[in-house]
Image 1 (cartoon, rainbow, N blue to C red):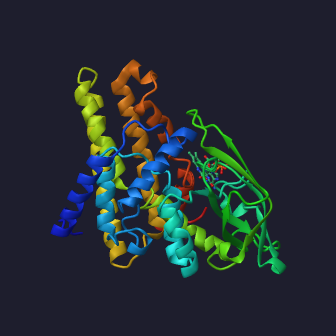
Image 2: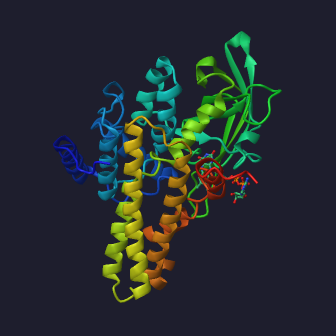
Image 3: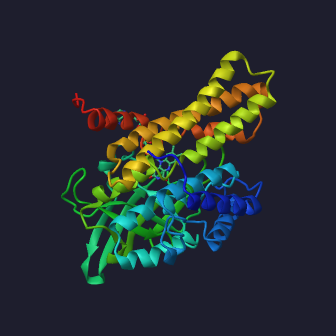
Length: 378
Ligand SMILES: Cc1cc2nc3c(=O)[nH]c(=O)nc-3n(C[C@H](O)[C@H](O)[C@H](O)COP(=O)(O)OP(=O)(O)OC[C@H]3O[C@@H](n4cnc5c(N)ncnc54)[C@H](O)[C@@H]3O)c2cc1C
């Protein structure tokens, strides 16, 4: 790894920092509430207008053709500036890399600019009542409607983050009725205002109402809604999962910034910082730095043409457990004040979900055991 930044990279950082310092909005409501979502969308449109929404994308889609290193620099600056969590993330960080890899030129040109500009807002429709960890148990089906040049979708998706506010969903559907498990699935993209779609929002543990169940009843989508080959949905979905567990969804900037805030809190509450707590704060900072270095190592490998593959499961376990430890230390520093609603107590509640979403940590440990360490399945 070469950890020195070039002059161009340093200039990129300075430009991003200056723009963010001048433009980051303060005090937005949570993006998982209806009012907060609208405020976040407005912010993301401003990001797009200034060409900071999707820095690594081609210029024709609103990006800056930034390298992976520059993207990481931007993320670091974004979190350092305390900028709002991205409500477009399921589109720009999960679906977009998959579209770049498997999409046709027509799909890329039609979908990516509107996604980048926060005109179309995407949610992830994978989980079903009977298919969470076991995604291959997907039952939602797509029946060929050859006379209309498309598919009729029927089924139920659940735990759809911000599904209650989004405009489009991507998900897995069984296109071969005789198939089982990983075979015969296809990856489809569905507008949520299509006839036959019912979206029912519901609350999370923290009271935000952004979760949804999505019911589909004979919803027609054209052939262009299939991403990748028909029947190859599992392979396409695993590329999305790699992005979700690995690099793009949780960049190190997020944890570096949280660790800095934790250190500031420990200084502010120095009376509460027992030797043990000081050690935990130090450990959180070391872990955030270690995660940064691990990510840089992965980026070096990607730039050299190697795919992180199953190793993205290591990332996922590490960042999700780090996030909980970091928030627990903050709550202990806050003492009784932690009972009050505030960024640390809300952050703590959300951190508890980290070992569940993007594939539970038990599942990641199975993947690490079998595919990274090569241990026997039983
Ligand atoms: C905050 C949040 C946001 C989410 N957003 C989305 C979203 O936008 N879109 C979406 O599609 N889904 C989303 N999910 C759903 C998430 O992907 C699932 O909750 C997750 O995959 C687990 O599935 P499940 O809830 O059905 O639990 P189950 O699969 O029923 O698992 C229950 C428990 O059993 C364990 N377990 C299951 N199988 C095994 C095994 N083989 N070995 C060891 N342990 C096992 C699990 O680890 C877990 O502890 C979200 C979840 C959360 C918490």
